[in-house]
Image 1 (cartoon, rainbow, N blue to C red):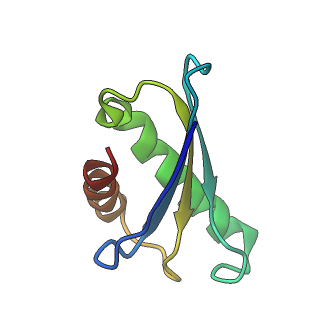
Image 2 (cartoon, rainbow, N blue to C red):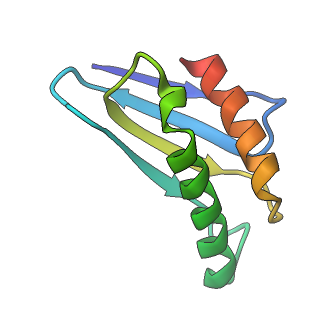
Length: 97
């Protein structure tokens, strides 16, 4: 069992928390967008959809991990493009894994 928090200052959009357990056969994840940053649910849901799509397209970026629970927290207060989120996701996973 391992808990790690990766929050880099140069990665502005996403924070990453991982809980790894040897008993889990699959990867599961949670996407969190704070209500403080986006008071309207429509905006929070849009950001969550963008992040989930980035995760779905880049599931192989987890590399040798292959299992565990992950939590991604969106820390920006504005909605950015899909490509910006994907770029930050890739750099964050590269530093974590």
